[in-house]
Length: 304
Image (cartoon, rainbow, N blue to C red; front, side):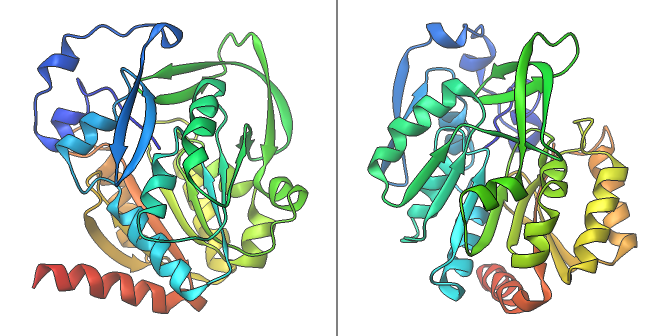
């Protein structure tokens, strides 16, 4: 999952002030102590300046949408597999497992430091496979540097000195002989749409429920990429999209082909006046309209 610097995001999203962290200088990752944080009954080891505890304290319902959607998918597809791209330290796995879901999870984390923490944290979970991989639009090797701040890792290609091997979602699913991936969660600091493009063959075959981050502050999440992915998904039979804010609150649900609503939401999130930093979006195939309806009915029931 993705975590931001509270100085420029938490106040904007949650309307709170975190004095302790604001005055805290970032320490090199490998010099930080390891702490333990309990998430939904699971003890996770984190680096001391990881922002997960701060976010959960500020918003106890953080990522509850992920838990809810994964539960609905599991209830319908009992034997399906879950793919978690950008698994970080395993917090998303803890949230999924907190619902009682026992489906096999394929957890992918590119950052070597968080991959090691992910291994430690997943010892308490059954039926989880862990991979240290970077995914993208095509298989290639790139020269880049990785930067890890506040619990999230990003790739910077300018003046890159390290060779990073990029795989694709299609090749991963094929290489690992994954038979029934019906839920795909991606949270990768702006690479989400590129990863989807590298998984077009698998998406057209399996039609998984998609849960991705929509963050236009990253260059890769540009209008061209968003439009091409949405158009492809429409051709594959995807029909519904649900937008959430950073607190996991449902903003609006719409038809995927409603270009007016999608364009307005795209323009809104790009506005400097926008009070939220990114969307989480859930995109569903026409064969999963029942999941879409259950999702909305549950949310509406909480408002009555």
